[in-house]
Length: 98
Image (cartoon, rainbow, N blue to C red; front, top):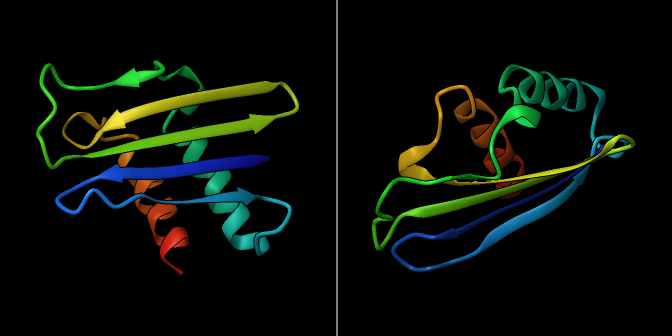
């Protein structure tokens, strides 16, 4: 499974991101990532999750997950992130910062 993760925006407008492949991750991280995707019901989320009005210095997250069955992309504004998606975002941010 391939995951493309990006976070843009914020006060400095800095973009961070990374392309991850579960085949290249340590087994424990790959299992955790797959579990977080299931628990967040990622493939059932709409393509865009945004508040009515985006704060000027807010973060925007973009996650694309590619599997053998296809790909799904979700863009979520920080203020509109569903609670079920937060653990996945936190884990991906941790991986990107390493």
